[in-house]
Image 1 (cartoon, rainbow, N blue to C red):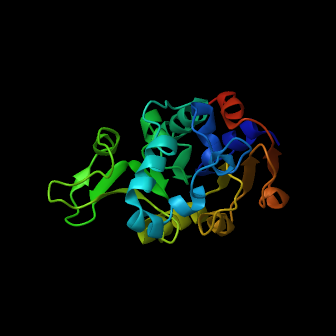
Image 2 (image 1 turned 135 degrees about the vertical axis):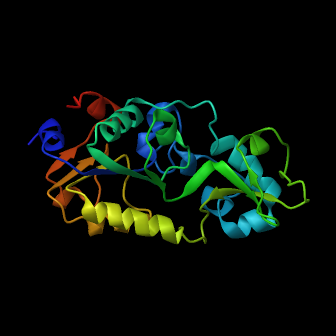
Length: 236
């Protein structure tokens, strides 16, 4: 069955996506040959984006964070736009993303569950005051709150737990879906990758350039650019 036929046959689609959805917007992923993990820094990227490192070396954290994790000029691509269109048409009930770039919302998607947080939300570690992305991009060194506390991005660092409400909402959406489309993710980051096991619906689709752990259970596997694949879908 083709992707178009599966989508036509679906009433409650959930999309579960990762870094590959945003690479076509110019945002590098972590694990590809030219991703963040392949670049050389004073410390390994996995260490830099950990809670311990943020606490102990905030200067180094923010230097890396501004350089490699914030892309304020990035624009939604064909994949983001098509998913928003599917939601508007009543076909798609939720986007569950491991990305922190906010591009799904920028494309017009309303029900977006951000498992790993968002660069667009920042809070004072002391008083909890909210700050937009500009508080980080327009400051030098460690961004500070009016109260003198350190501002922390609302992104899930290594050693931190996912938001319990996001977990519950993601599992609920996946369990209720008749079609689950997994796109742009290698499904190696847990616990997020384990959520797809809650899917008991009719159609499981994987769109990813490299193999994933879900391929063997999928009705349809497409090893191609997710933007190109979704851009060809006609929304009825």
